[in-house]
Image (cartoon, rainbow, N blue to C red; front, side, top):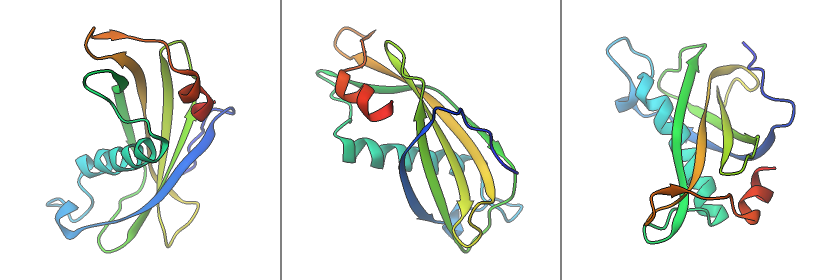
Amino acid sequence: MRLELPEHKKLIYQMAIAIRWGDMDAMGHLNNTSYFRYMETCRIDWMHGAGCLPDSQGEGPVVVNAFCNFYRQLKYPGDVLVKMYASDPARTTFETWVTMERADQPGTVCAAGGATTIWVDFPKQKAKTLPDWVRALVS
């Protein structure tokens, strides 16, 4: 199955994640919560590399919505190629989109999801305008 991503998406990061035996569920396939962990791992690795981590005494990104659609089962052993895209920067938010495919089956999307991220002033607990440097990363 092919995921239809927004036309204006931008590939911003990709990584391979090994499927661990402990990530399986009783049915012998990847537990649904593991997909969210894989998306989180990719997002955090990207944020770390981009210098975009939250500062509890200052500002930073917060995920306010996350979703995942499951198309094909993933099973141990194997590696998952996780690709993260960004789109739609608004005043305080931007969208991320993720596809997951087995590294040994390139082009076949097994799951796809995403998240809405908002930029927050943590001491004030309020949304804040996306900094220009973040907007440039996701535009």
